[in-house]
Amino acid sequence: MTADRAFGDNAKRQALIADVRAKGPIYTAWLTRASIEGDISSISDDYGLHPALARLLPALGAFGEFDDALPFWEALLEAIPTGADTGRLARETLLLAWTHPTYGQSKAVAQSEVSEACEEIVALVRRSIEAPVDKRAWRAARAKLASVRGKEEGSEKLVDMMLSLAWDLDQAPGAAQDVIVAWTSLIDGEADASDEDRFSEEEEQAFRATMDRINEEAMQGLMDGQGDGDIRYDDFLAEVDRHWAADPVAYALKTRSLARRARCNARVAQWRTSVQADLVGRAKALPSEPKRSGAEAEPLSEQMHI
Amino acid sequence: MSIIKDVTTDAFETEVLKSQIPVLVDFHAVWCGPCKASAPALEDAAREFEGEIAFVKVDVDQEPAIAKTYEVQGVPTFIIMKDGQPVERFQGLVSRGRLASVLEPFAGADQ
Image 1 (cartoon, rainbow over the protein chains, first blue to last red):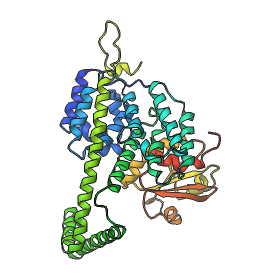
Image 2 (image 1 turned 60 degrees about the vertical axis):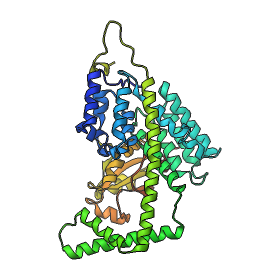
Image 3 (image 1 turned 120 degrees about the horizontal axis):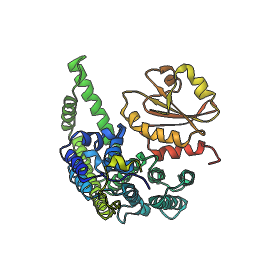
Image 4 (image 1 turned 90 degrees about the vertical axis):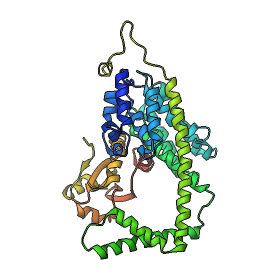
């Protein structure tokens, strides 16, 4: 429940979409990794998007590092009705981390004290969609889950994600980003664990040892050749590639590792596409803010004083 | 404006070692990306645990003596101090979930 109402008018929406499409200054500050440590309050102040949605969107677009993000952001901004409450949209989307039929993490936890504590957090998030939830309730839910963490082996990352979900998004909107980042990591971990060509323990150790050795040798070689001059990153990468290529056994491992990473990235992209589509669908279903009788929607700056 | 203040070597004894409540010490550096990325989560946690756990920052480049005393090898490093002693330490980018998990056992029992 917030006073954030989307856009204010269609012209503002279109200006925002145009900036995103052109990868302009708002895009750069908001939807890339610059946002992680940056102040993006203008997205809420000027465009009426709830701060939690503003924090969620860069993470769900992988901070613009893949080509599929731009069409998603555009489609979403087009889909959100003018004047809609986007706090609801953020909360509903974050709930998917637990409830999504394919990717929700509820299926990753057996019925246990951990799952019960997670369900309590989910219930609070559902309540918060309709009405503010008292700070002490969030705190109690987190304390309960924190107290039973470790009781289910291998659930630490999931617990951290659920503990990030258990914050009042009006007070700590950055928690939305934490949830999406943690969910991404869990999906990536699942993809890696179930990959068709996982390294054996021995292969993993050999690969890591070789990587460390080659990185060290490449750096040393460049330092020996260039003295005190700065080493360019591209030169370092080229030198590393040369070392890998000179060792056929190690190179075979590296090739397999790269292929596995590509498969994992593809599965994470499938997850991302699915959640993005869900979010756009939910946005289309959002009600607009009812207009006051006899008046068009007011500029956001005036609405914010309500 | 940060609600977590930087402490100097001179103030460390008063602010941390003699604190009546547990203190989370964030060893950071101005050039450190993960330190900056962790800052918003730390600010939220500091507000959440206000009165139960104190939060301070130590710039390892400005206060190398403290970093050396606590054998800080990289940043960000977080150490929870209780009754003047380190009781928990962890490193790297932190989320609100991770902070809640680590800090909750040290927070007041009346919550």
